[in-house]
Length: 566
Image 1: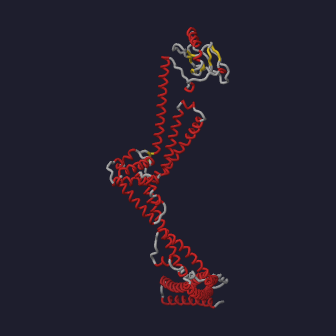
Image 2 (image 1 turned 30 degrees about the vertical axis):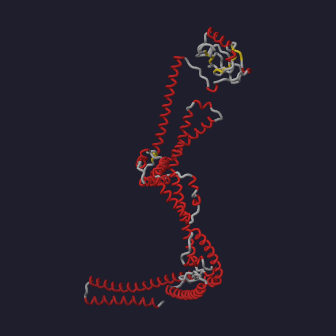
Image 3 (image 1 turned 180 degrees about the vertical axis):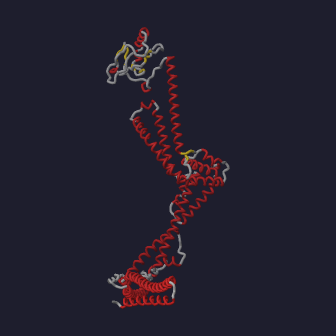
């Protein structure tokens, strides 16, 4: 048995002996039972508090040891990572106190290795710094806050051998940048005005310090020159655009434009200056021709109004458009409005192009509808009618689909901008429905007009008799073809039609021909005695007409009447 266990048993015996002694004293004194109970509770409390305090102290010691173990383990893990070594494995069945001691020992060893590597790193960095100052090179890049690995230390040792190769690379880079800088300066007509620029352009290449800072400064100088060159080009292009715009507004003749064609390319300083002078000249000319310029701007403004589908009310809202006091202020207002509309159109260009596409499709649809109601379309040649019908059928399918696509896009646009998208002063879909309604009303009106015209024509025919109807292409003289001529009642007739009429050479009476239409096969027509719904000419009159035909046969046989050759 352990001594600690023996001492524990002795402590229990001592406690029991002390309690028995206290009971004997209370018995001799004559303390009542309830007071004995209270005093026993006090003794218990004192003993318990003492034991609790001792237990707390031991627990605290245990916690400190566990905390120290955790700290040592964490530091040991960090050191192993920094030194790139594997962590040491802990042995099993080790007490807390022994584990804490072993860990502290390992941490101290790792700290010493870290210190040795840092010292070696510093020594190598000092040597590298000396060589880099000679070659105008930056020091070898390595993080001093970290512990270098053995491989990193070897790389640092090899760095010195690579300095000459680095110097050759930097020199080649310097030569290339210098060449580009000289080209940019020539383009900008720029003379070196700083000591650094003079060192780059004028000094010997071998005398230039090839430090990283100088290379970065060279690159910065090149970027600045390229930015200036780009800005110069943008300014020149802006001036050229301004010149072209003024040319159009002032209606400058082509001969005068060709006189300044040499400055319409390039971006050198002298070209920029010449462009600015031309702009100033045109601006002065614009002030002298204020009315002409404003009218040209108004034409452009009208184009934007048309492209943006402005209604008449929206156009009238820009009051300066209708002013006749041609001043510089009026010109500025027009310029500002053109700029605003141009930006507005560019922002909503996709929607406007969609509406324009619908407008063009709608006009094409109306044109097909007009042609579909034109009877003369059946007389065309070359299959145009079939092509038009195919296009019309295709358009009837694509037009509603285009309307649905535009409706969805416009609804999305209205939701994003919280405002209505208007075309000619009204919402697009309302505008579309209005166009369809107007089309329906036009068709209804045309239908009523046709019905009224047919009614009047029927009434006139019933009152005066029907006039002969002959296709326009059959009018005029036609040569007589003997092979296609046949005798009918001593009269030569060919290609007769059922509704043909024969006018006598003498007199003005008109009679219906009793001859049937030739069948498609070209066989001889069948002579019918009567025509249903037609009046039969009287025999006496028919004979008179026959006589007239015989008397004038030589004249009538050379003419064509309503499809007949007589």
